[in-house]
Image 1 (cartoon, rainbow, N blue to C red):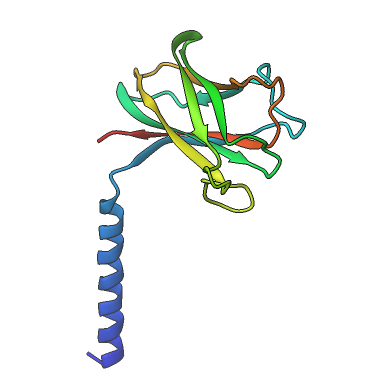
Image 2 (tube, rainbow, N blue to C red):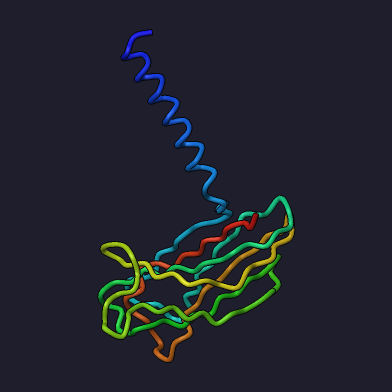
Length: 160
């Protein structure tokens, strides 16, 4: 066997091992992950964001995370939202969600450019197999119109 074939074989084996290690290190199984844009004119309580969740093949508990992308026009340090889970059109639960957007020093807490994304955990969601679920998000602020919110997203991950 030549040196170049040996190096090539070792490199292939190394890549295969690294890929296996990388894939097995993460126990997170994304069930649903989606963002929806908010009207640039502002977001009112009448503008409900609705996420139609993929029906589950099995009953399971999902870890949930809400994401908010903002622009420089967002005038507050934080955002209050109402998050509602519905099953087949019937309300299952409603939670008040508090999302910190800026720290006390005025620096954005989120990651990303040009629209920082701030995330916050939601209570776990219990879903049954084969049923249609929706998760709705509405602003819950004193101001009638909230400007500077670019996108709202939800990420659901299955527990092992």
